[in-house]
Length: 149
Length: 346
Image (cartoon, rainbow over all chains, first blue to last red; front, side, top):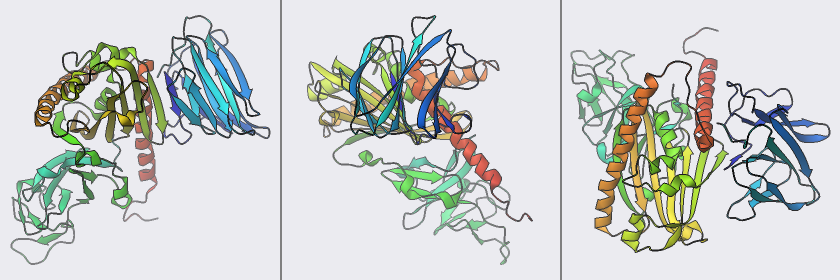
């Protein structure tokens, strides 16, 4: 399953704090406690935008990479891992290597990919100034992290 | 609570003529009728005199006459005649609701009339496009509108609830993709290399393997457009046999909804038997939904406080739509709270 939430979505999140915007959270509600909870926020300061992930390290492993300089490459998402992709600057093309889907991300859009099968995703930056943040969320105490609405 | 500043399907064009028709939308009773030149009109269904339903009255010229004491209202809602006296009280008027008539549906705006923009009525042209054959139905669902939205955003129920009609086991075996843009939520399911469902096989002799797809586009809060069909394996969807299902969902109250349904296809357009078979078959499918959602509504009303739906990844679109709906309601409430009350002193 993947979910693309555009920056103009009226899917308003709760208050994220000064200078930050909540991009996504799982479980997707602020009312329920859950040790598997993670939250992705877009923060902006003088050095530019970055994605901040809040999660309990006992339950979720977090690995964030930022790609730039016209990078094009394949990211392997292992079964049960969740991936959060956000354009920090410029347009980014995310596509399933095995097809058939692909989507352009603009700054502020968030793309979440998950599922219980391995998956290969191609990430392409078409202009040198484009930058993209890719976070892999790994389950520490379970076989899989799944999207919980 | 309801989103009021939006267009809701109020009736089929064919349902509204010179004889007044009653509808309740978002708990507001309205009366619909046409003027002599055919223009549809919606007024509050409550005479200003003694609250008698105007829908129990009759049209006279371009006006509607109350069936109780004969107060008469023009198409603008202003009282034009009071029996037994020539003076018309200033307050003798009823609310007029903006309407748009398009492609066989009459849409009503239940909120602030100043915000009503006819350009915001969604695209429904398939219903009247000669390149498409259309079957229509309308149902009173005895459930809250939210349950219908959930139902349409998670079509895996086809494999179970509609097992003997349109269901196929493989539907739930294929994953979904969800997209959220503005106030539109789309849930897409691609089912590659599957046998064509009987509709295509019977009408178009479509044998062998095809890519099948469902994409529900929910224009929160009033319309779901289901883009469905089959196409050759790996071929673009636009080249396939296509179906557009329009689902106009109109809240009546917290436990009842109107469901306006139009199923349009771009194949076997002149096949009258296929159209009749679809009309009968889709009526069965909708009745299955109506029965299930009524049972669900009863279940929700008897559910203890603090017990919530246990949603799964498959419900990603459902949850996003619920959140957008909630946001739209909150924004309207906030805007209404900020608006000065007429006649209030600063």
